[in-house]
Image 1 (tube, one colour):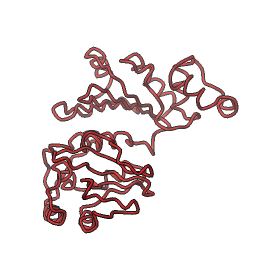
Image 2 (cartoon, helix red, strand yellow):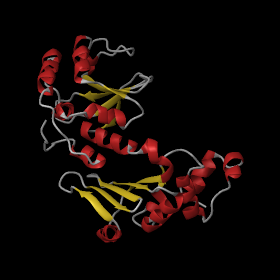
Image 3 (tube, helix red, strand yellow):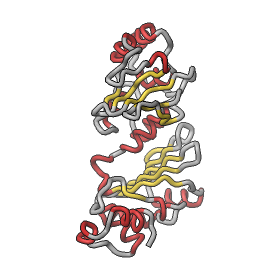
Amino acid sequence: MSTPSLAYHQVVFDIIEQEPELVDGSRSLLDNCERALGFALPAALREWYLIANSNRILEHYSNDDHPVSPKELLEVASRRGDYSHFHLNLAAERVLPFLWENQAVFLCGLQLDDSDDPPVVAWDDDHVWKKWQSKFSTFLSLWVWDFLYFRDRYDFSLCANDTLLTEQDFAAIRRDFIEVQRRVDNSSVYHLHKADQHIRIWLRGNGDVLWWLAASTKESLLDLAQRVWHVGTLASTLTIQGGSMYSPASKVLQLLRLGHELPETRLGKSLTWQEYKAKVLKGRK
């Protein structure tokens, strides 16, 4: 194995804080796939398949979904005219599958447009290809980000899609926290921490600023959220990562937006989910 300089997927490894390794032995398998398919794999997909354990990463940061392996691509080549229970003509539609939802409800594929990093499309029971992302590399990085620590820590985490982070605000955060990783040249992903408090910031090329805040207790998460509450528009964009109205993270937002916690009896009996979203998640009183 070798440690590469990735052209398309470095951001994924910046997010999960791992070093990628290439599996040189995979090249012959991918060459066989290309011969069977009759065309070269897009460069971004080929790079992903050359990375050690790339499909395990995609499977781990998911809802037990099933990535299509290079060996399965060889099987795809023999039945591109009638693929899966959806009976898709992948050859005519110029689509290459790479991910199945865990119960085969939907299929993600690359729209082969002769680009190195093609768009991602999805097919489901609506029986039409829907564009998901403009690039395969963007799909992977956002997919991994969205599932980051979700299963283990969502009760004690908040997230946001913001649009503003000034140098002054960023400097203040970095004074109070230890910066673990910074790879500005590749992807502008930052991980800062202090004791049990963690901040992840992803400055995306389109101007979005994705945030993930986590701590080990409600009190610590409240302290962390208060530290960054007035950065950008986090006061209105921070939301819970899971769906429970009873979670410690939800109660942190109640304290910050309402000034008090809502009684659980009220949450369960008289406050509807729509009212909860308006009052707590959207910050309206």
